[in-house]
Image (cartoon, rainbow, N blue to C red; front, side, top):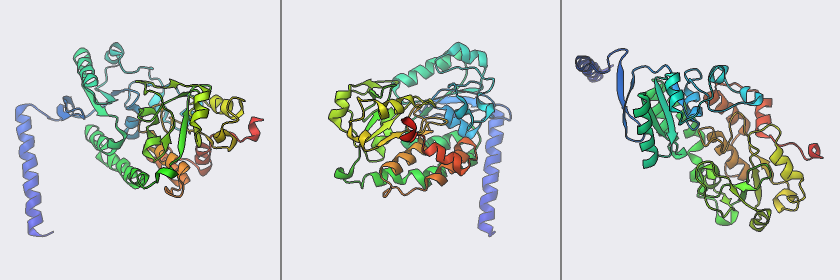
Length: 359
């Protein structure tokens, strides 16, 4: 190491020591005390130096799970056995079902901090400020914009004192996700797949372009055929079968409510009201993978990253040339702390039953 580098390091160490001494003298950020952060809404929040317990909302739960499988004091979903298979028991076992908005439950559970992931609107920021004032527990607000996940992960790494894990997760996005919207812009208008996103038990609910629930269809360079209003919160606009036939999609994506029975998919595949639709006749009907969380929606959280890759490859395999088996296994290892076999990955990637099984 040359003299210049040694001098620079010595000065940096001296600066850190002086800064630490100043903070100790001022009574701030001493060992076991607190630190002040600026969350993603620009709010100053005083949090413990070392966080040991966290209350999460539905949108942030998967993000937090990627960093830590133990610290959450609540669970926000009821998991079936096929979903539990891919999750650590420490994430859900012996934890009460408690979702955002329940201030009394948060107070009872006594977390070090509360983490919410929301669209950063004035109303949501005001609601979080009101919640924090009521419960007297720090509330950290994250942006839920999928295009800002690298920034969000870096921020979470700072909050949780886990920068190395943050870098690992960010690296996955840089390797597989960053190129998708870039390539999406190269898809010619005439080549864009026309998609109907079928929700509800009979497939006659949907979310149009512009909805957070169908966002990935837009991002991968496809067209959402639904021309209905974007509904707030949970979405799912009612449509008629006549509208679906008029839209005449190339492909139908099915969300079956994260149920192993795949009732929605089976109904669309076999019901007389659907079987004459071009996409169904041509077997262009795909069940969206859902274990342990929906891959393109429900919830609209970081679980969508693997769905982002899956959907782009499904619709445009010559544009997005992913090895889906390898990518799926890597995603589950890094984000869900689960090392899966090739057979398990194939099962997740191909959830719909064969045509023969339906007759």
